[in-house]
Image 1 (cartoon, each protein chain N blue to C red):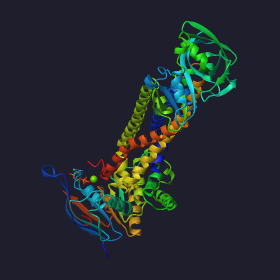
Image 2 (spheres, protein in one colour):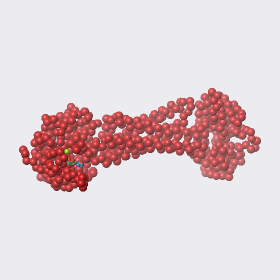
Image 3 (cartoon, each protein chain N blue to C red):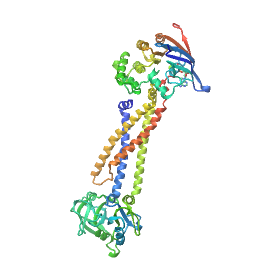
Image 4 (cartoon, each protein chain N blue to C red):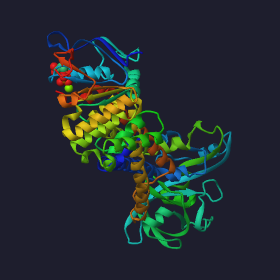
Length: 367
Length: 229
Ligand SMILES: Nc1ncnc2c1ncn2[C@@H]1O[C@H](COP(=O)(O)OP(=O)(O)O)[C@@H](O)[C@H]1O
Ligand SMILES: [Mg+2]
């Protein structure tokens, strides 16, 4: 393979292209990781709900913040046809003081023990009916707050401050870009609506539903599947289109840079390509040489950028302030595959250039 | 016996209208197997153009070129490339080696773009480098070779595919006369030993006199030149 031999002999030029491929793919990977990471922050707790669908009050417009369901609505949702299990859930954002006294905010979710709304406790213990001043804190909450199971934490809501004990740790993620904290639904109701007469207090923000065919618009509530619910979280759709366009730019720039680089390299070699053609090399043979070079450059670039991106994510996770970058295996696979395809597409230009070279130029320098 | 090469009524015009250059005009000649022909003539007389048409690099405007009876004048694309790969060994006026390859690899390129066995090619490359006095330079990059060495590597490359036609365009341009004579003599013995045809364009009369026959070009026309003239 002359193409690969050429790469070995011209290490500097090809090393430079491989480095650029590496940097671009690293950038695209980090953008992808940011997309995944932001989605985790936006609503991993919602995605982790043990439910098929989520019911909102009729006029909430699929907003968990605006949704308020009365006890009658909750009961109707619980007994709707097809529903095999259901659980009311309350949501409220509240502030707390971390271990250094700094005010931060968290997403408080009120649930009833024993229902599908109950999170899985990873250490410590679960809440029981009497734990009005207990809470289950997400891993990310404990990390950000610098607190541990058994510690107490001051929660501020409305004008008052209330002290809670962290009785257990969970791993449910975040909600509305805040770490999730689970409390009893009665406690939630008190925190959010404590100054209203008990008869007027809503019973829940949303209802988690399990079962087939439970989505749709009903008399006084609207139920959608989890993916729709996720996409309707405030800010998610804007954030996703931003990340998607950044990613698309990354691929386009990658294809252009690789394409232009190989194009220029090919232009520089026109006379050599002419000689090979004059010796009888087919365009197809020469094209294969270019292709082998592009594949090798892409492979080398990705072989460096993938582990580098992975290591970056690891390093970022060790920082006390969490940076929203996360990878799934899918991120790596689709990013590599797409970069490969776009890079090859960019290199096709050079292939066309190769096909057009006239072997007659081998006679060169005759005039 | 069929002539190795039979050129008849061959013409090449570059451009058209007022800018037309009639580089080769109505050239006809034939050769016998094992013949080595020299072509001489002033610069611009059409020597390279004639050689390029015979070598399948240029398509003639008129005329035919028969190689062992087969007209190759109007081959195109893939077939023309295959003709060059199989039947022609061409030494270009500029040596045109690939700069990032060694002397040996420049010979092996012919094998890479063709189909033959790699081991046979490797043996042939070694033998050719030996014959051309390049054995000790086999591993040197083309850019590190002297002008004369490059020219000899180019000749070795032209012989790699064991071609029927060996076409050489002013090979002695960068060879000293002692070495030049040796190289031309080994080219001639290669052609004679295997009943091939050799055509060499040269401006060096001493070299031309080593050939069986000298043809002279003038303003695109070809004339037989009497020996000793
Ligand atoms: N590609 C070309 N386009 C136009 N004119 C050309 C081209 N190649 C050669 N010529 C002209 O054709 C004539 C013959 O050129 P060439 O075959 O190179 O002669 P020689 O090899 O004897 O010096 C010259 O007048 C040259 O300028
Ligand atoms: Mg010439």
